[in-house]
Length: 472
Ligand code: GDG
Image (cartoon, rainbow, N blue to C red):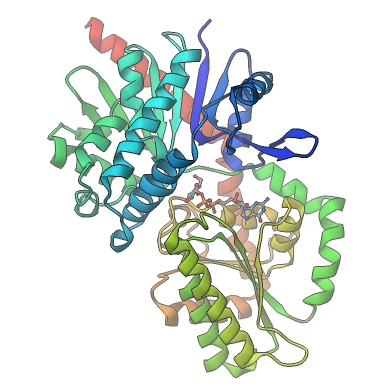
C-alpha cells in the first residue's frame, strides 16, 4: 500500500523537557489542522524537526518511538545546524531575499553548506520511511533542495512542493549566488504551489531566465517530466474560528477586555516579530492619526500583540528595540491618566484569548510590507459572527488578492493608512456587514480542507498526465 508523507522543517508538535520527563504538545497551527486529515491516516507520516536538542541516543530513540505512535518521524538537528541552516541560510538569506529585504540578506558559504547538508539529512530521514510509489509533499523555504534530492532516491514518486512565503521577482532572486541550485532543487517536484499568481509568475520567469527551460502556460518541461506550477491560496479552518467565537470559553475571556476597553474603538494588530510585517510603519501611522486628528484621542486604542520569534537573529533583536521605543514614545506623548493609546504585549496568547481579541476588535490593522498570505486577517473575518468590523489590509499580503472588500492600503503610505483608520472608525454598520459577508463567503468556501484536497488532486492529475505522455 502506498502512503503519503508530509515534510516540513518543524513537526506539528512541541516537545518540551520537563522535570517529569519529555512532554508532547500538539500544534494548533493552520497547516497542522489542514494536514491532520492526511498524516494521521493509515501508514501516512509527517517528517520534521521536533524543536528540541536531545542529550543522547537513548533519548532520541524514546522520542522516535513516541512520535511514531502519533504518525510522526523526527529529523534530529544539532545546535550548529540550527544556527547555520535555520537561523542562517533560511532566515538570514532566503527570508529577507524572498520578502524583498535584500539589504538584510547575508551571503555566507558556511550557511549554504549547512543548508545543503540539512536538506540531505531530511532526504535520508524520508528514505528511512518511504517506499517507491509513495506520495510526498514538501513544505516551505527551508527545504528548497529536498524535492531534487528525493527525486534521485525515488524517480517515480509523486512529489509536491508548496512555498508559504512569497517568491520574489527575477531581479531580486537573481542576486542569490545559489539561484540555479535552488531552482533545480524545487524542480525535483511534479507540482509546485504558491499562494498567488504573482509568485507563480515570478518563479516561472526565474526558471526561464536562469535555467532556460520552457515555461509556457504554467508547465515546465525539464526534458524528462512535465512539471506543473500553480497558485493555491491557503485557507483557514473557518469552522474552528467561527465556533471558537461562539464558545463559552471565549466569552469568559472576553469579559475583562470588554471592561478595560469599553467606550473605545479598538484597533487590533497581531503578528510574529518580523520586519516583513511592517510593525514600525503601522505605529507611525497610528501616531500620525493621534497627531492630526486630536478628536480621536482617548477614543481609540491600538491593541498590539507581537509574538516572539527568531529572537536569536540580530535583525529581529534590533526590530524589537525599535518597536519598544516607538510604543514608549507614543504612549508617553499621548497617554492620559485614564487612557493608554497602545496596549502592547510581547508574548503569545492562548487561542481562546486570540478569539476574544478578534471579537472585541472593531478594526484589524494588518499592514505587512510583504506576506506570502497572512492568516491573521482571515481568522479575524471568520470570528466576526455579527459581521461588524472592518479589515484594513496591505496590498502586499497574498490575502489581499482574495479579500478585496477590505480597505486595501500600501504600507509605505502612512497618509493612506491614517485615512483608512478614519474611514474604518466612521464606516456605517450596514457597509461593514456587506463587506464582511462577502469576505466570509469566500473564506468559508475555500477553507484549509479544500486547499489540501485541491493540492492533492492536482498532484494526482499531473502524475497521470506524465504517465499518459510517456506512453504516447
Ligand atoms: C507563514 C507566512 C502565510 C499568532 N499569534 C498567536 C497565534 N498566532 C497564529 C495566528 C496565525 C499564525 O499564528 C500566523 O500566521 P500568518 O499567516 O499570519 O504568518 P506567518 O507565521 O508569518 O506564516 C504567511 C503562512 O505561513 C501560511 O502559509 O500566511 O504569509 O509568512 O494562524 O493565529 N496563535 C496563538 N497565540 C498567539 O499569540 N495560539
